Length: 90
Image (tube, rainbow, N blue to C red):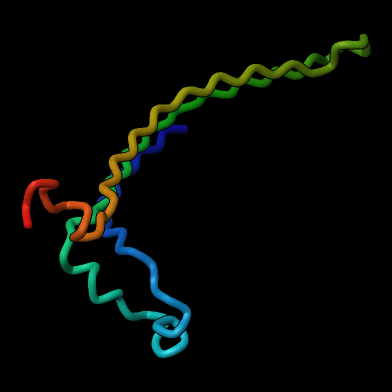
């Protein structure tokens, strides 16, 4: 088994309850002010081997499975404008 996934996506901030009730598919207006992207990259692989024995002994079947994977997630969080201003600016 081999599998690989590369999924870039936008991850906008959530909606208030009133915004959600009005239109659950909308995007919060402040979402366009920030680049709130999310990148997910994942790969995995595995091998399974199984052997059945013909004898009537206690060991009738044996199986071995190997699995490995790697995952990377990049996430940029939105910050309010007030926290982006310099501490010395008016």
